[in-house]
Image 1 (tube, rainbow, N blue to C red):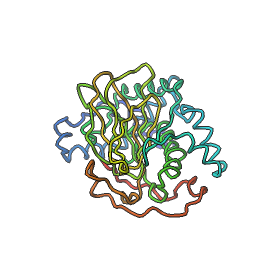
Image 2 (image 1 turned 180 degrees about the vertical axis):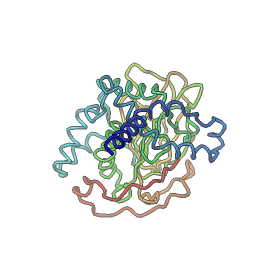
Image 3 (image 1 turned 135 degrees about the vertical axis):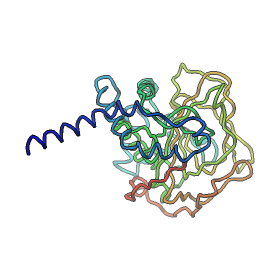
Length: 330
């Protein structure tokens, strides 16, 4: 019996340790099937989900001596300090708000990544991209050919355990309380979603005017200081002034805004722009009340709800205990 048990354990370990090889041998759906949203594409990701998660864990372990363990020390020191102090004492949240510059009502910008550490994070993403483990690019955004799906709810997401810990920490300890503080999203930010995206002059060069199916969107530029690009400005429509306001993404900076604020990306004309984009929204895709005007259009499936009143600082600096659902917007 002991021999049989040992054999079964070894067999299980061999299967687990072989996940990386099996994942790399998978034949991905064709680009034509992806473009046509063929049912076989979703079937492929669902059937191989567990294998891919095991492969990412194996890849991370195999490269543990050289691979970055992403954590919040990658972020701007001033932001980290203010955030951590607010978690200890929510009455100090004004120090967090002071770091964010208002672009227009409902749109704010601040330094998010530490420029001295950003190259390490980019190298981590480059290593993941070169891993030969199948991933699903965010082709729901105008069929972008590059980048990763970041959230566990998404097909073919970046499932390395250390990255997922980093991503969830960003959403829980940083984005959600900041969105509640600046945008008033409390109660409609239980669910998370994220992806990375890249703009290039020859492919995926712009994004037409639109609104997001989110309560809050945070768009973080991860270009290095010496990675210059031209074009790719982002227009946010100021609904009070009735005009667009143009912004330029700077390395390591984040722009956080209500999903209902219409925005559009100008064509990039040289270089590349790389961003992380993360969303918050409520259960069943609920977002705070407030839609777009003719400049953009809202997601028809998104339920609009009234924003709760009289939220305390302590409530803003808390993590929802509701479970994550399995629905991904795209």
